[in-house]
Length: 316
Length: 197
Picture 1 (cartoon, rainbow over the protein chains, first blue to last red):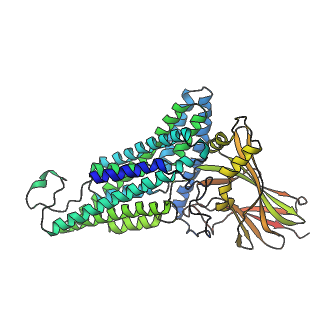
Picture 2 (spheres, rainbow over the protein chains, first blue to last red):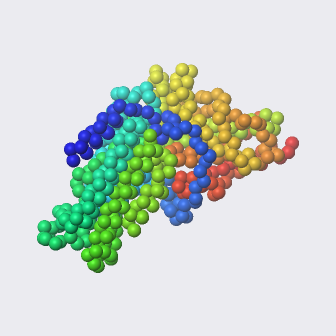
C-alpha cells in the first residue's frame, strides 16, 4: 500500500512539471496533422436522434449560461443566478451522458466488484468532487502561471491527462495482481477471506461471493477519472473570472459537477444491479457463483487496465 | 461474459485520441466562395465564436484591453489560437469531383471583437482554381472530433464574390454518407451549381 501511495505521489508531482497542449484544436494536435478522415458507421437511428437532441441542448445551455452570467455581472443577482444554476445542473447531467472513458471505468469497476447500491452514487459524487477541485486548481494555475500559454490549454495540460490515465491503469494493475494472488491462494487450498459478509470467518465458507469493492481502490479510481476536468468546467470559471463574478463561477462549476455525479452515480448503480441480477441467475451452485466472481474480477481489472493504458499511450 | 463485455467496451473506445464528451466550442460560420473569371480560387470564412470561449481568447490576446485587436495582437491570436487548426484542415472539407482536396494555404487573417463577440476572417486558397460549372464541388465545414461544433449561419450561410449575380446557386444537404461524432451527426454539405457562361 505504501508503494502504491509513492507511485501516486510521483504521478501527481508529474502534473506540475509538464505542461503542453493536448486535444484542443486551437492549441494544436498532439499527434500531428490528421490522417485520411476515418469513415464512421452511422449510429443506430434512435441513439443518433437522442445524441443530436443532447447536442442541441448543450449548445443552448452554453449560450444561456453565458447570457445569464453577464446579467449576474450587471448586478441582477438572484434570478439569473437561479436560472444559470438550473441550466448548469442539467448541463452536467447531459454532458456526462456523452462519450467518455470515465463511464467505462465506473461500469467495469462495479461489474468486477460486489458492492452495495449506495457505493455507485458515492463513486459518482467522488468523481464530481475531484472534478471541481481539479477544475478550480487548473483555473487558478491558468490565472497565475499560464497567462501567456493560451489555450483553454490549461484544461488540456498533458501532465494532468497522463497522471489521470496512469492512475487508472495502475489501479487496474493492482486489481489484476490481487485477482491473481487470490486465485493462487485458492489453488493452494487456502481459505480466501475478504470481509464481504458477516459469516466470513466460518470455516469452509468460500462460496460464490465476488470481490467486495474496497474504499481505497474506489477512491483512487475516482481520483483518476475526476482528475482531468472537462473543458466546460474550466471555461465557465474562467469566464466568471473575466467578468469578476468568481463566486458565481465556483457555484456554477459545483452545480455542473453535481449534475455529472447524478449521471455517473446512476451508471454505477445500474452496473451494481446488473451484476446482482446476473449473479442471481447463474449462482445456483457454489461453483457457478465462484466462476462468475472470478470472471468478473479478471474482466473488470483487465478492462480498467486497458482503458487506462490505452488512453495513457494515446496521450503520450 | 462480463470479461468479454468489458474488453469489448474498452476496445470500442481506444481509438486514437482520448474520447471525451464534446463539444466545448461553438462557431457560427459564413462562407464566401471567391471567384475570378468564373473559376473558384478560394473560400473565405467568417467565424463567430460563442461568448464563453470567445471571451477566453479575447482575455488572452487583447493585451491592452481596449476591446479591439491591433496588428501585434492579431498576430498573437493567429499564432496561438488559430495556426494549429492547420492540422485539422481548418475544419474545411472540400470535395472536388467527389475527391477530398486538403486546404493548407491561408491568405489574410483578421480577428475582430464586435459587441464582445470574437470573430475570425480568413481565406483558404485552392491548390488549383476550379470551374464548378464543369466539375462538381462540395464543401463541409465541421470538426470530425466535435471538440468544436460548427454551425452554418441561419440566414446567410453562403455568399459569392467575383461572380455576376445568380451565376451560381448553392444547396445545403446533410451528408448521410460520411457521418461524424460516433456516427450520430450527419455533417452539412454545401454544393454549388453554376451555369456555363
